[in-house]
Image (cartoon, rainbow over all chains, first blue to last red):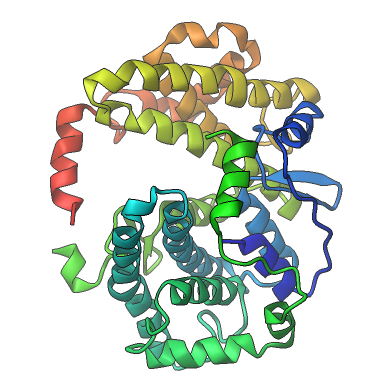
Length: 207
Length: 180
């Protein structure tokens, strides 16, 4: 789950990254006062030290005009984004569960995707017949949904088989130039969490 | 009932009916209300600060919310965690914000949702352990100031729509309804 990278990439914004590999790096970051609650991710932008993923995402969405044209569009974008974040959060957490629980967890997530989340978005697209989720314009909600779709497909390749509009949506959004570039090898996109990644996170954050 | 008629977007509560919409997702609802009633800062930078502070408060709030759900043998550990996070992570951050600008509100010298969320949180913390507030004089002063604002004062009085702290029994009832 890397929603901040996705949004920056979608907006065509260039960014530098600093990765935490050791506990010492993290403690140093905490000591130098840039982390409001001692937590990452941290995005330094426009003179601010922004932490809290949702705060960062909302700021970027607003700054790069991916947040709707009025409050009513914004609230729909928020609702859809929050829903996809719930789904992606489940997938992230699954990587940290014991191996014997993995299969059961994955099955549960795929079921939730197919019964709770994807039907909602399929219906939204069906009801208005437009290319994007909100306001007939590309927004943060579209980026989040694409990320969520790709994450679930990593668990179950055929998960979109009953969702023709989501399939078309996925193809369409993937073809937007900034997104297309992000999906290509060599971009700043990261691979799915593997055991090495989980080990590094556990070591740095100590849990 | 609500689940089947499609009123609940992701089959979850809370759901707020407002301005012809059925809104789901707590954060989306709060963002809408805050923006509509001018409690969200004057620009996107103030908004980012308000969001950052509010998200931290939501994290602490969530820990406190889960306390009644703890089985008795885990309660002490949970309480220790809440005390530790309140004292070392969250409240020092907000005390420092108030200290750094010396203003009456967290952001932009003006009331925002961040002040409301923080005061709500302070009330919960005081219910758990009032002694935790001793080292946060500016937060205490904020609580007093915000509590005296007419609409807040009214909400704090008996007979308002404010709900009592969740107890284990009520939570168990709620779980039966929403559990799938």
